[in-house]
Length: 364
Image (cartoon, rainbow, N blue to C red; front, side, top):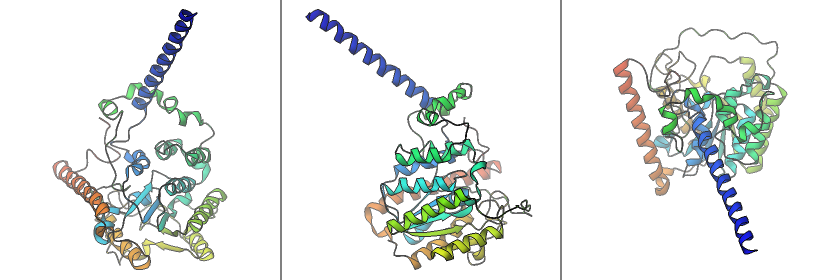
């Protein structure tokens, strides 16, 4: 009897070891095949980088490229001691902003939430799976991530492919390169508190006029989630600011009117930074890297100095330069910020353009 029992135990142990080994192999190959977003289209790394933060933030900024390409949290800290973070991502939809806010509120409560209303134009039927992935894959698992996936999925997507990304990225066998192997277990930091740095310059020319719309009313789905963000901020005692980056391209004055009416109805502040270009001395022959669609570091720093002063003048924000444990972490962030700026400038001087940064960079 003892021998039979021992044999059975050995079989159980062997089965468990084989199961653990199989799961380990599956996990490794999943980590290998998923996109790393370390060069080129780096925006897919932004969501997960937030979880590495070791300091509190008085200001959290949400939105798409209008948020993460136009505000520099490091500059706001250097000038005013403001601790802020941009929880932005490529083509971030407003329902994703809502769930990313809920996700952030599980660990901290900012004094001010800044919402870039540029993503109000991203109507549900136009959402793209590639951008869903860039925002959602990096979220930590929680009910908020589950709800965000369900709110974002296109009809052809499946929830199980978010649980097991290998089902989505299995085709990447032929694309694997040294970068994939290098970053199987860890990734390099690519943003600066969520800011996407670009030091190159490409002046704004004559911008094409966007195609007129039949209706300029925001869709009900987006309006529902704007309401949810507002109500959540009210519940938590957080000031909600609605903003529009100083970018003329791809926006209608009728949309501004919609936002102004909404802000007036609920007692919110809406800042369209296009109205303050002269005040911040923005020069779109020098302060943009892509013909006026986004600001480069020079424009982002001008906007950040202007916005940082507004925040300090109107809200009871802490000057974290006087808090040793926070300032110590920010000194590291500043060093990384300066290193990347210098590296980009050296590359521009050598090649006349950025090679290792931006959407045209290659993974290897």
